Amino acid sequence: MFLELESVFNTPGLELPFAYALPEQPAELEGAGLPLAERPLVEGILRNRAGVVELHGTARVALAAACDRCAAPIAPVLLIPLEHTLVLSLNDAANDALILVEQYRYSPDALVWEDVVLAMPPKLLCRPDCLGLCSVCGQNRNEGICACANQGDPRMAALRQLLAD
Ligand SMILES: [Zn+2]
Ligand SMILES: [Zn+2]
Image (cartoon, rainbow, N blue to C red; front, top):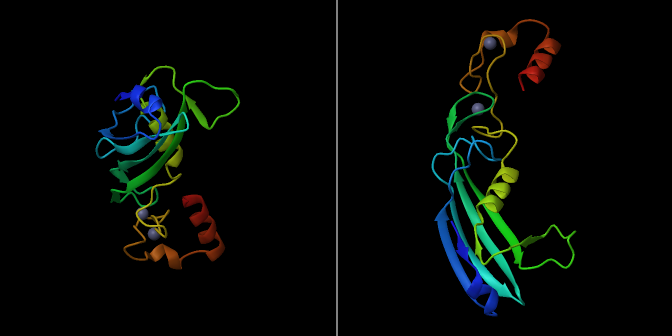
């Protein structure tokens, strides 16, 4: 999706809302292969503030995945904030907070994908306290305790749990 930035850069105070479905990433780019339930929805507003353009918005990312501990199907929806400042030239090249836009016709796709990838939790869980699977018999321990829990050295059981995580 391309945003047409000419009017918003040249009109102090102008606000321009936008909304679109983010295209999926090509296989070689960061963010490819996320278990998306649908294309992420990006909504936001562009605002001219003293010659720069602020982008405020949200990416709604619906996933269809499996719990990393117990493999149950899960469908988390992540709302990822998008906050950037777009500029036409950089005075200080070291300022990472500013996004240099080289043309008025600008695609925020790469920027949004970067935000999405950074916001991904390290593990996707069915619930924060998911007990996972028994490392001995494979029982889903959210559904009940298996007989293995009563066997063997309890310190070994603790170690097995650590390894299972
Ligand atoms: Zn789970
Ligand atoms: Zn077991």
